[in-house]
Length: 65
Image: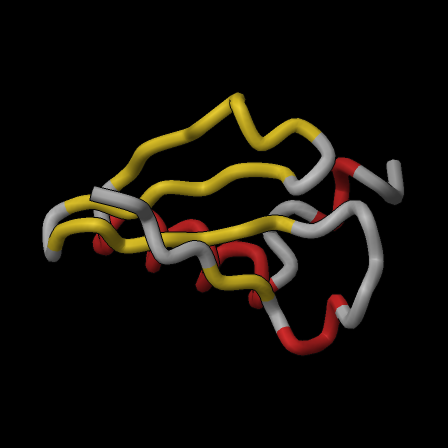
């Protein structure tokens, strides 16, 4: 069955985008548009924790030492 990949509307036609799909309720798949054969898999709960941490600035130190 084909996977219905989604990308953010903020990406427009940019080449370096993340694509996200939820082929089942228990699984989230993520890929980078420039290398679509490399897939990451996670759960909705784990992805939610990651997104909340990113929004709160927990990873800012990685780009601003």
